[in-house]
Length: 272
Image: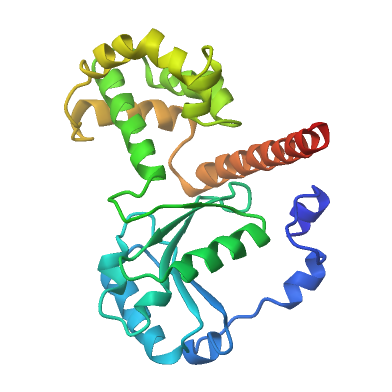
């Protein structure tokens, strides 16, 4: 938090010292959520463990407390069905590391009350995150569906010997990722032609042709796994020391990018 404050990226209106004094640990669940308006569960991605926690929370909270899960793939129906307070339950999936990547996917249970979605959305906006609303649950939500589609084609291209693992990553970091850091694929399409309709008119046939050449879902094992692992380990050995150092580098880059985006958005507001 001190580092974020120094970089002028600390969220909220309080100083780092003031915020730190508001953070406490507790080993008693009832005491931990006493008086809470919002509870964010962040335990390991284990459906039985999460269900156990929400069953316990269901007995403790009142009719106003929002119960949210950080799960990245577990469906709300797997976590919340049968709870007395199911209308107050929602998935609020943040992106790692959430200090620098502000997106939060809000995914409702079929019985989630619309007010739960709206209150959670408002809260996330208020604390400086960037929430998006899904109208219903779907495997992988949206972020991971997009990520897995990219990972799948990545695996096929490397496995088929079309490109090396290092060059594949460079296609993203020095190519697509440059644009996608500031706008999504739909706006990219819109700007890459004379609007969306013109883009579809120009490229529709080509896109469909290429998509039909995509292979089956990879098994993420075997020779391709070995080949990609060797390339990754050569760049960053898989021991904790090297991985943590590379993560620190990643977080530093993300913080600087987040600051740049913040400045750009501020300039946009002033410009318009």
